[in-house]
Image (cartoon, rainbow, N blue to C red; front, side):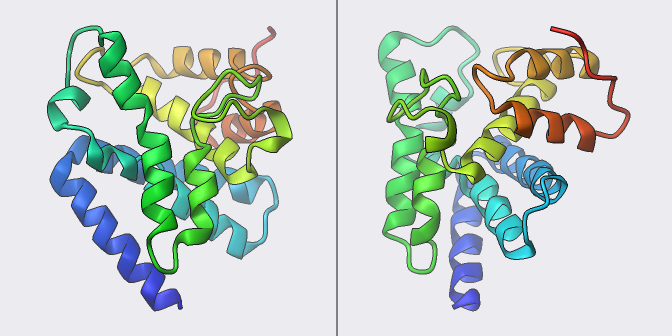
Length: 193
């Protein structure tokens, strides 16, 4: 079964890299961060591996989004934003139909939920969001702030960490943010809120 899963991950990863290289590179960075957080949280090795897979595949739904929209340097229209936000649900559906990866579908679908319940696609909150999705959400948020995108430059590392800490308890799970900050090399001390 592990070979089938590895093959499926390779196929999806290759397709994402061919569709939009920046998204694939982001997913790999998120996978490294998420695995480090999962280890910091003391998860067993098999769960760390699953968190890593969820991070690697969290944006696979962007295969259904045209690259021009992913690289758009201007503010998205409401329709474009809605289309882009569908990628989480689309990714969950892709995995639900992929042999050996079905068990990751719920977590991938939930990676854009917010701890306070204001996320998408289902408005899940707190502990109702799978732990793997909460870990990936924090890694995704930090990497999105730390990398240059078509629509903005990367934030300085200290500012990205400050904003990550500020999002704890609302957008992100406090315990996960604390673990992520502790895993970052050259981290800054925890800032008061």
